Structures are given as C-alpha cells and as structure tokens.
Image (tube, rainbow, N blue to C red):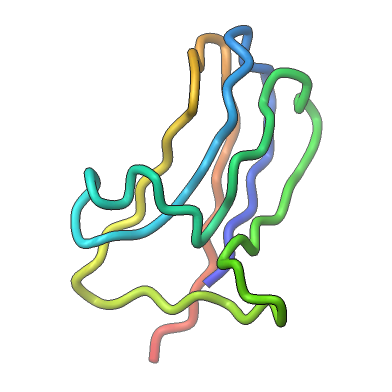
Length: 91
C-alpha cells in the first residue's frame, strides 16, 4: 500500500497532513503508516509520496481487511485542498 498527495491549495493554518490506518477512524488518528506529517503551508503544486511506516527498508505497509484509512491535520486545515491517492495490491 502506498499513498500519494497532490496539493492544489495551501493550508492557511499551516497544518501537517498525516494518513494512517487502524481498527477505527479514532484509532487511525495518529497513525503514520501511509503518510507522515507533511507540511501543507507552502505545498501547492507539489506531489508527495508517503512511505512512513518507520521501516528502514521502506517496506510497504499491509492493511488488514478490518482496518480503515484516515487522514488528519495537526493544526488548522483552512484553505487546504488537494487529492490523496492510495494504491494497494489485494492479496
């Protein structure tokens, strides 16, 4: 599983975007296994790939069938616009 973020409008509140997985959206709130804390204050026009699983070999994370994917911002996300693409291989 991999995550790509394309930003079309900056966050005026200077948030950091994180995408992760967990058993519930609440549990996934602070997870960084797909995309870890990328600054969104001056990211317009950029495309960022997230391999944020903490593995030195950058092995792709595996998402269990009973888990959810959630994204959150660490601060005010006002003005932030973009797209998140998640690529996965079903096994």
